Image (cartoon, rainbow, N blue to C red; front, side, top):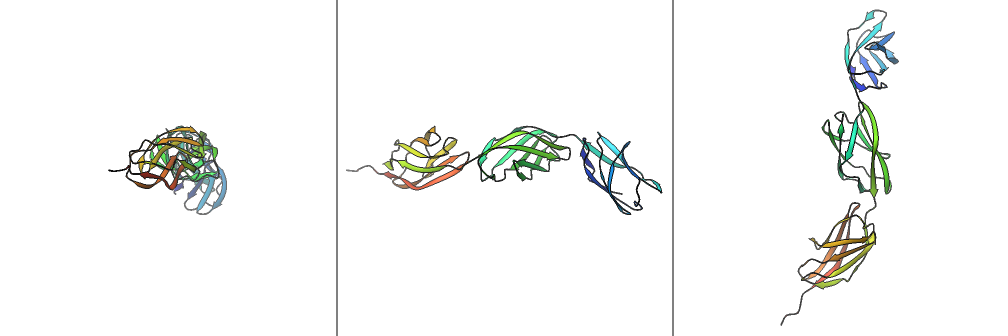
Length: 247
């Protein structure tokens, strides 16, 4: 007479299905000494809502024909989550974050605001999850659901992708060292700036302005790529390296 699921929250409220034979007209289902609420009953199946409890409980079914042998049901405490590996990311989602805590083995879902994703369980203390796309930029609550219940308390910030409005000046020597100002939007969390794939030294002056020193590179036009916590943006052919004169 299987029981599914065979584990649930210590607070009760888990919907449990018991299958077997001669179950019709069940008068009681007990989890240990506590009665469960019967919500559906056929000769081969009973659906109940588990009462609160702790540890392992013996589940029995009572009908006019007697009481069944016990099935094991395990009570699981609510999870505890202590931290997110990253507190922000792009509105488009797609980045992977980890959540550390305890009681995470049965993690079934992680919600970022109204958007839910299925996690990968690494251990009882760690899960990873691909952040779902958000609706808009801003702070959302993060909730984690396991067989033991749902826990809240962490937040995550969705960030808008950056834009580039201008790159000035638009040319400089192949030796590098040209002081360039990049203007745009959502540049405050910039992680890197590249000129033709070569990393440049930069400083975020504000959320709309970057001060950059061009790296050395061969002559020609190159793409300028700015990468932030909110994503990346490319200004195609925005800077031209000019070779010095030869005699």
